[in-house]
Image (cartoon, rainbow, N blue to C red):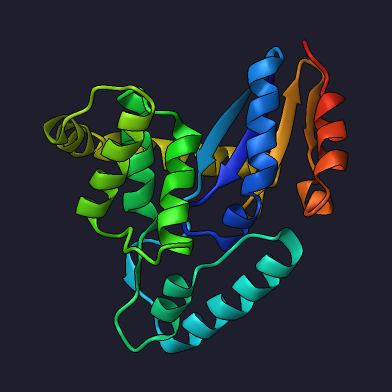
Length: 217
């Protein structure tokens, strides 16, 4: 089966900027005989962000917004530019996404919900309680019965899965020469090729044409 591999990180601003392109990719995958597979990167182990990195984030976000059209909310920008502690945690957010997948939630949908909470609403997605709220809300939208106890049990059980998933991603990244996020690679029976998605920011029709020409095995 043809597979598009998406190397991502929940705390990567460029991954947030690529959301519209990945949305279209996921829709195409559901209509054709190929699949989208997510590979988490674990970019930022839990840490409090210092002032110099905050400025880097704000500058990068401005560039991302200009190129991709992604919206960064006022509450988010205020949170990054304030003197209040700013904690980022790729590992806990990735753990939540993996737990959601085990519970039947759509993996990419949960990634989008976490990104939106962070980049648009300025919520602290390094907080386990907020991640639980987001997951329960998504479950309700997707018609999945999910309790807080179910979620907490899945999160508690997912530590080992998180380590395994990150190790597998990093091994595959090393093998394929993947050096950053987001990266899209197409795998078919004839080999691997890179999908240069960044050429299509703000060009949805051209991106659709690229995806229409993805070979189907």
